[in-house]
Length: 466
Image (tube, rainbow, N blue to C red; front, top):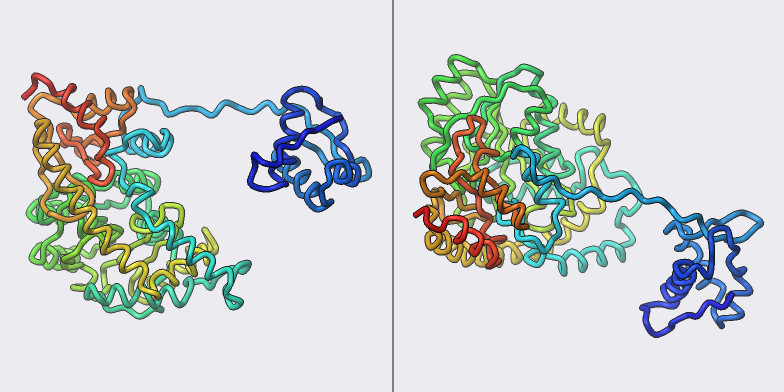
């Protein structure tokens, strides 16, 4: 069988050999069950090294195009019957899962003003590649072993330093690394919440809080959230009646409203936590988008009742799933046991990469640039919202989210379904609202709202309504 190798059209000789054999299979010059030339004969006929042919054949086996049989060489594999990858389901009830699936399943080129992360080109890919190379060259780096139970010591030290800059005094021994902030929240819920327990959330709140609490079979009670925090009168009345086990929130910038819990509100919340004996999870994943840090309940409380959670997924890379928990020592001990039982450890290689970015100052420079870029995008998005007839209701001027109100009589859910059919992903208000009282709101990610198709759709959808 003559297999012609195109040596100029591929990055390596191995890739050229793989492509040539696959082309012969696709053109039926090599049929299922046919033997491939032996490694020695193929190498001699093509003027290649045996190692090149070995690697090419190994790649063909890994791709399911060839089969290796000891003593019999390599044969062409039977044509696989691959299942069709299902596309996202547009016509279904709009709930937290709907938004997550739309955001993750649709093509990256689809505008996603409703998603919760930055565009990939805004993230620190070059720095991550540089740090990966540095870790790979370091003979002391841990590349194949499990990490320690608490996580990489150097990274925990860096996190403790950064928390101290926000007024949260914590030793590295009170910082536990996890597989992202979502895993951190889930771990805390496992230890603090039993099925049927009452948990307070903001109304509106991050939609994955609702999805996660549903999995834990908790009773979810939403407290109206204003630009400076939850409605304290409602909070106290409900706390006296329901005795919550936990309050789960973002201090700031708040998801989805963009607001922040102010100092007076934070103090009163902690007083209520003491009076009614509930814990607080303070999810702070958007902290680095904030140039002027608002007070953190963890700082005011000294991590007595407050559990502080963060991650690098929003600022650095969504692919690097690494977060942390800062809490009182005995809770960290319990959470470490739960972590070992459920996930055993976190990604120690990722921890070493992030540690290098923090230690050499790259991360600090990166987030300073991000804040400037987000501020510029925020101004553009607010102006665009006003031009098409939406009213921004965010309570702060920082962060990536703008909470915007649609004109009277326009439902965000219907707008979002129509947008999904047109290939645009919005985040309608009621996916964030336990009481389903945000039907006229949309959450906009200012970093993901620059595509002209977003505003063209909204102009057409709202034409004649204003």
